[in-house]
Image (tube, rainbow, N blue to C red):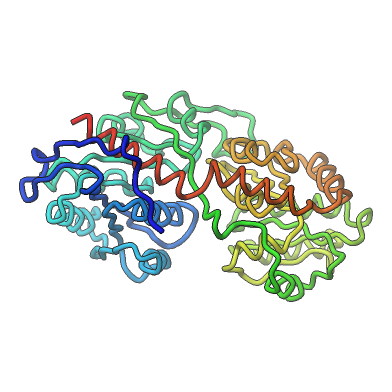
Length: 417
């Protein structure tokens, strides 16, 4: 059942000056008109957050559209969620087709809020909003633990948008202050420069997960999946979940090194790599070289992640690059599973709600393997503990909570006209 924005959040806002085609006031009976621009939609966490936020805002009874290229993985996802999708033409030179189509749509539908999520869409969003002639509010979300890469964007973008959402306090710190780790083995972590401009526009709103789907489950599908993965009932399954693209993935190689340190001490432990990417051959070679054949393997690509999360016994997230928040940690905790994760960037914020498991230094195999050894010796979490974990995560990191906070920000911006 749909819920509406609380009455205190829908104070009337005069929008007549910004949309000559349609004159109305924003209130409980006259919902916001919101366009999310996304020129990618090929998959990944940012596209998923864009789609789920649009759905959450629609559930709050706002009028929401997503505009982007058709025929992509997430254009289908958005339609399946029941969110109106507006196809845009091919990018073309300087994304002019995308920009002009978006500007026409903003004008024709009297859009009040234009919101984009990818760094590649920052300037197309600004230009489309300006070309529309209707002066919608411009909101950007930074889903990465670093500022935009270009010098002009870092210095000018706060002056061009009305709000910039950081998905964690760590991301906000990067945007305001910069973060410098000159001795990090990861080049992308050595220097993360700040933005310039009015930092009051930076707001922290955590991303969300679908806590209706990510929850503790006892269903036949879990046993079926464990059996398909070769997991006997007495096996303790550690899993590293996420993409594994070259050159280093999300710490899958470090996960296997830690597994090699403990597999003889815990003969019933198994080590799964769940995801997809270009490192498959490298990871299979590591399994052979480290003597983990029969103990560790790559699973077939899995699309039912709530069932997968319930089928494992412990999530291992040994991230080595940058991490804005680490929602996979929230997903595991929401399913009542302990987590061993790198104490890196925004991950401690995600971990802090559940606190079931352990944070370890990134790229340090000894603490990672010790944490895994310790976790394998603990009894599995009981039903009450799993339910409490889910309750805590749902209260803080649900899509509904995230959508409500974003809607409040939109209304605040419109009141400031």
